[in-house]
Length: 386
Image 1: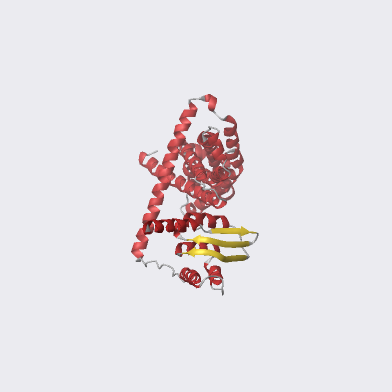
Image 2 (image 1 turned 120 degrees about the vertical axis):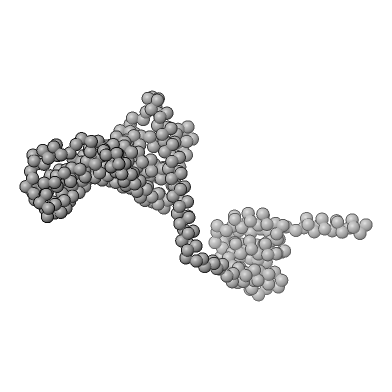
């Protein structure tokens, strides 16, 4: 009989306990019920629902049972300073509950910051080097994967002419090629003038100023024409690709494209890649002609080598293979620039800051890859004797 009575008493006590609540009325908050560990999921929901508002008046008189788990939720709701002042007010709570709340608040406010162990300089250097190496590896891994996806979709589309997107391709050619012609021509013209002036200054001491023509022609046909055009497109067009695709991702337009059953690579990447591969060889050719025109201008004004003589020296001394070597690098540069710009756009997370970060990253990566591939190609062509 005694055990049966104790069981009935415990069941009655459990049913009499009420989970903690945070009742919001206008700008007032009333805490009531049991704020204990057994009601922790309910307390988390109550705190999450009420933590978005600011309260002028807080009433703790309805607080019944309390432990440290409930006190931590009250701190998350009101903050340790305000809860401490409320709990320490006279006649606000019974002494044991007030003491418990004040103790937990003091522990939270006086919690020391964890001290990080001081690592040796060599250890920090090795750790940072490892992190940067892993970051470069992950970057190259993502780039190789995206290049594979782009090539797979490109070959799939080329075999199905009815899926060619001519209008976006023409628009991208105008944006990447025609609109960039003036700046490419002006920049290469000025660089050609500078190269001719420096070459004439150095060669004058040897009495060989006539070879300034060869210097300008070789440098722009093999290197400077395509390299300057690629660097300009890396800064001008790759950033535009990243910003455009990144803004679409922020606005959830890429999700809408996938919902419609369309492939974002086919829709957004392939037209840009093909447009870049068409535009950059044209811009490289314009850069070669404008650079030699700038060199011819300096030769005519400073060295008395007039345009007919300049052209005759170029025809006699410069072979066609130098032009072909320079132009052969343009499609590779164009493909890498377009792929990197689009990939960084797809990497945007969902904020304006992320768009800016990945736009900067696309420009830096594109310029670095262009210079790296150009240096490798220069050594390869030198070893082959081309």
